[in-house]
Image 1 (cartoon, protein in one colour):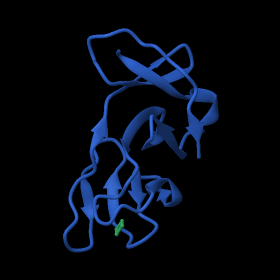
Image 2 (cartoon, protein in one colour):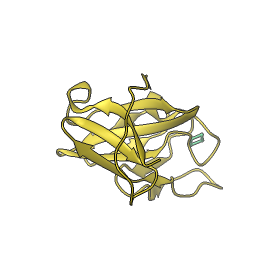
Image 3 (cartoon, helix red, strand yellow):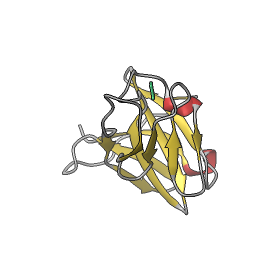
Length: 117
Ligand code: FES
């Protein structure tokens, strides 16, 4: 088992982000300056859904609850409330207009369309 498709490129404009549910887990997919990235969608501080926040032109995702800011590509915390760390980053691949979550980097892509927030 290698990966799952969770969003098509056409569903995500540059500067946008979406929450996608894959097998019960929410991921935040963002597109910044033409590049796609995926973070754990549950904020490292208190679990708020980051896809309900915002993505600014610098590539910073702001949490909607207490306004922690994370780099959408690296998950690095940029500004924070106390007791908040970096976001988990997921490896993804874009192929034939679809974005795959690479659960196993050595395997082949295999996909399905998951729920999109
Ligand atoms: S839940 Fe995100 S900053 Fe508190």
